[in-house]
Length: 233
Ligand code: ZN
Ligand code: FE
Image (cartoon, rainbow, N blue to C red; front, top):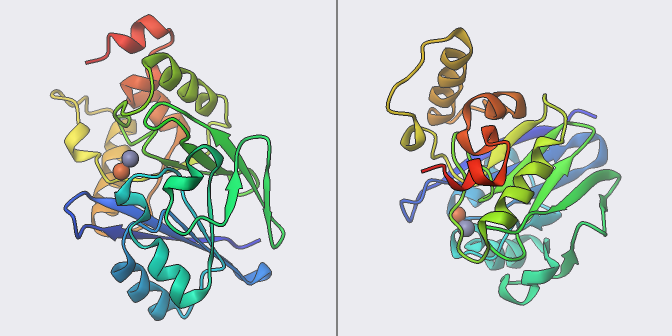
């Protein structure tokens, strides 16, 4: 396996979304996670000369599905969507949930039900490559807002994430790191390295944080109990 991940910054609506192109040459497999906007994805896919086989949607919000219909029309890509939000995802073809792991042309993808931001939000976990696509559940240094869920649901969703291997790389649905920086920055070597990754991402490079880093620095993952979690500002 020689999985490539290309982050595509989508900012037509000033929402700093990420779409991700995943390419596995040994399987002739190309995926898009959260086709936020069609134009930047078309440009990148043309440049890379790739045609997506599948589009994987984490949740139904407009800023995560804006390119679904255009990409489906142009490439014939099948759209994979959370079972609970199937009817709200434009172009949805295949419903998935935690009980139905995916195998796409030989690539194993585990679906993790993670309600909180929306009722049916799912995460996509690539266990072999140790990558986790977290949509609007987990961001760098923060989490998504509770639009359709309770704090308890969100806390439980985050506990599932925390049980994955520490070296899992985190690919969130937005670049919000800078807005989530704490007022006082501790200049430890670990946090300096973490900030360097933020700057690399801001320059369009692939520089994911690890789960270990989020557990260290993200206050919502540091919270060990529901009470601590609810007390986070
Ligand atoms: Zn959202
Ligand atoms: Fe979003």
